[in-house]
Image (cartoon, helix red, strand yellow):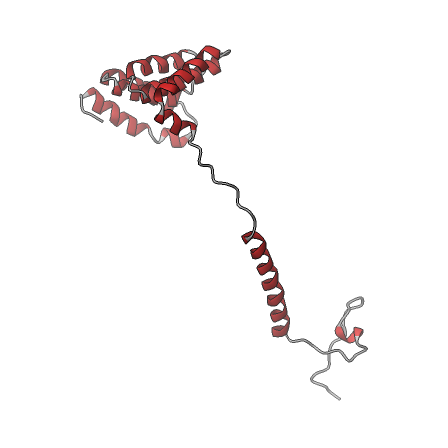
Length: 188
């Protein structure tokens, strides 16, 4: 007596609809189970969407950044950087203040003073040499000192050659090209 629809017995400890209903359980097809899962997930998703949609949003920051403020008020940025330099208590703080002062001077069209400030940062031996040399070369260019800008870029290339950062070293050809242009008197 073979029955095509004879079901296999579940493993011990497994609860099936047959064990709950005393052998009268019905098999639910896969499409019905999937439909139930979709309905449950859709309801949960709709509730989550509603909760997030009605969540109050934080106000947008409309205050200008320090960089925007420095560009809008370069004289104030110079004064602020001078105060930071006077209050600096160690070489690292002095290097940061000199760099800030150089940037403020450069933004205030005082390239000669920016050159002095960036050189002050380098003299502390605490400055980020690569970024300070790049800024110094820009200050020299703004001050019309092409040969000094080329010298600063040559020091920058030397620093890049000693860098362990491959992405920084990959910029060497760009700076070498700028050095050549400056030494030839060509504008960048």
